[in-house]
Image (cartoon, rainbow over all chains, first blue to last red; front, side, top):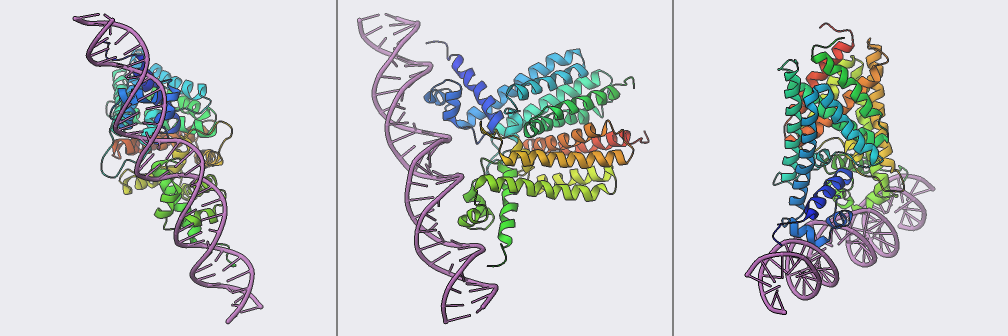
Amino acid sequence: MAKPSAPSRERILVGAADMISRRGLKATSIRELAKHAKAPLGSTYHFFPEGKRQLATEAVRYAGEAVTRILRKELDEGPVAGVRAFLTLWRGIVVDSDFRAGCPVLAVSVEEPPADEIPPALVAAAEAFEDWERLLAEALTAHGADPDRAPGLAALIVASVEGAIAMCRAKRGVQPLDQVARQLETLIADALGHPA
Amino acid sequence: MAKPSAPSRERILVGAADMISRRGLKATSIRELAKHAKAPLGSTYHFFPEGKRQLATEAVRYAGEAVTRILRKELDEGPVAGVRAFLTLWRGIVVDSDFRAGCPVLAVSVEEPPADEIPPALVAAAEAFEDWERLLAEALTAHGADPDRAPGLAALIVASVEGAIAMCRAKRGVQPLDQVARQLETLIADALGHPA
DNA sequence: GCTAGACTATGACGAGCGTTATAGCCAGAG
DNA sequence: CTCTGGCTATAACGCTCGTCATAGTCTAGC
């Protein structure tokens, strides 16, 4: 035994993030998730004893941090390259899933929390957004953007990409993401001092 | 008889749009919707005999067109005023609901359609986005923006506002919408020929 | 006042949900 | 080999879901 757990746990998390990004949190059932992740139903409660709440929270964190890692790496080449990678990442997910999958963080963000508490999955979603914004803002200021304006610009980038992902799914086409990509690219070039 | 129907029908529609904007489509149950709209459960099937599909489709159309009307009216004062009204509208909904409600069009857009068909509610969502983008693009070109770039700019506006609504809900604060408002305002001023 | 037709009230159907309980399997430690 | 404990299998709990059927109420037109 020894090793506290197998690759099953991570497979469940990945499957949960994917499923949430497609259907939303409430519409993702643990039974179907188990089937989708090729794990037995009992195992989900073995690995995540607090049930759906815990599973959702960890899935959002997992996905959010995966994107954070990619973003951090690509931003080493500068903000333009980083934003381009950010857009390409989501574009790939949307296209590869035939416009059926999107961003799990967004999916969790648009579901009403219960009246009495703020679910930890929603907190994890907010943290993911903040991480992405912070990384972008730092890269922008590091490359010459006005430090007062960089956070706002970073928020615009994240918001427009998330919105464009949803629009692509509704329209079943990549135009919104491509349009946003173009606009952001010139906008960032401008903010960095640019050539016109 | 005579009058084909009462104000009940519209009340159900409004309630459905509100509920969808909070919980998403799949998580909105007809039973709770009826309670929320103070209509009997039987009435929902009387007014919408095709059931949830029809109800969702009409609710999305209803909400989308309501926003379209507001947007069209406010754009008469120019693109800056129109975008400002657009943002203020959503800001009000988010704040008044204590960050529990958002955009029903976005909510429908991020839910996976069944494998065999594209649900009409999703088509209605795509149409709403397109209407908003078209109105914005027309206003931008009419006020001096480069006609080649206006559609992309309009898409960026819609995408960033939708994304910011979701981010506000996750963070339980209005900063994202306000940041996006500021960025869009200067961006539009620029695109219109501006003073720097 | 009576009747037709728009609306409402109520209850049932099968299905799926989250969750729990119980029992079984099976690799590795002693 | 035995035993232990991580993992799996199966069945069941109460609940809510979308939908439908049936019967009842109310009002407008004659």
